[in-house]
Image (tube, rainbow, N blue to C red):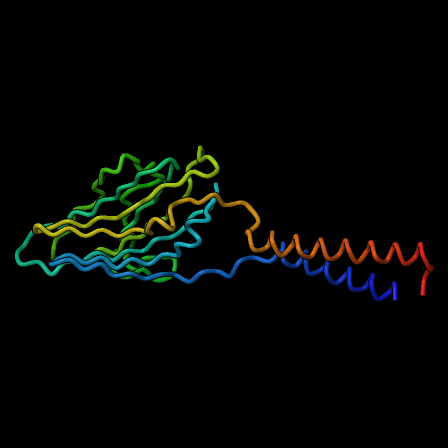
Length: 214
């Protein structure tokens, strides 16, 4: 009987280790379209991964900006941020859709290692002809001086012909989240498994003391 109890305790402890070492399921990329009267933004990013960023990590954010303009003119593309976590961004643009990690026709860099101002005011990064389509790629990462628990909201804006649209991750995915900890569900499950294993081992010890191995 004691051997069985020891085996059960071993299984429970193995389950605990597996729970603590397991990684959360990788969230899929979220694609969102924001359409104004004339201006349109299509945004694609893995916001769950972005919210869990820690120093040294980066998240890719692809955006396609276009316009169905009534006249010739320009659409201004801007970035705004507000919060306590410093963010650094590389901004590149391609004349056609990105293919994997590259631009077939040659990319153009708009910003490199840019520390985004966090005053909430949009900062223009591109003025594109209204009849063009901008394929933007932002690589967003946490700044070197980010404090644990700090977060920042970031948005991309497109303005033209009296029309203005913007897109961002939403308040539930502020960048970055605390990161670096063991997920709460794993802590709860781990606590239950540890308690069960300890009880089983104590029962085994008592059996040995009272009646010896059986």
